Image 1 (cartoon, rainbow, N blue to C red):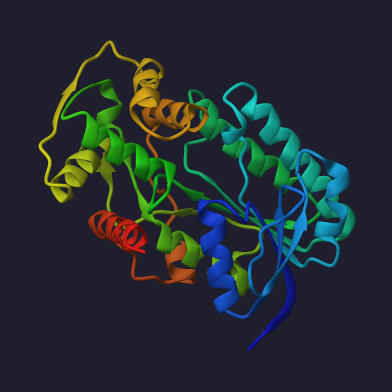
Image 2 (cartoon, rainbow, N blue to C red):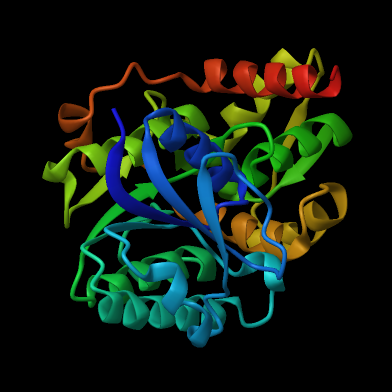
Length: 304
């Protein structure tokens, strides 16, 4: 059955956005996609509109007639310097344009992290975006995720590159930081589920998989799947900021993305609120299952 509400997806060409668009189309949703560039890529069954959140005059057409909008953008890929300012400006431009257009709901995917001093710049920026959106006249649903595991995600690519290229790894103490990774499949299910479940409107939810692991455990498990030996030697004097420099050299992920992510590894990111599991019950993938699924997707894509 077709849903006649018009749904806007920002960040529609990104790692999360492309998967969400596919899922929403399969669910019969009426979609409009906001993409940058003069020649937006075509997604069968949806409308595309060119626009840029840093150019407020380009947003009116995209938001006209929209009931609910997904906010899936961040500014790290645009360069390390000033990404917090760009994130802030983009969120503020979107909030004002959405209010003017009369948007009813916004669903935002951000990051986990306790609202205390000492958050990394990346995690603090993700929380600041949430606060800006919450100031809008619309209702904001805020999903907070830690490491997302899936083929093509920055976190997945960093873990794989470190395991494959550094059999002996000298690391800071962040390897002992706990994290609650989640499979991209489950992230998409939660994002799409929030659209169909009005009980999630205006609320904040932590989303994570069933496993709580240290980053060391995640890398060691990945190494076992890749049939590689991995020796990790934590040292107390190597800070996350210093380690981010050699990670940027080793991995294919852009330094503007990888460095803020690595610096955020000092912050424990685990779910404190599990209420979404009652509202949108899912058979969550374990970390091992998520990694195996991601590797299988990559092998399938390489064989095409």
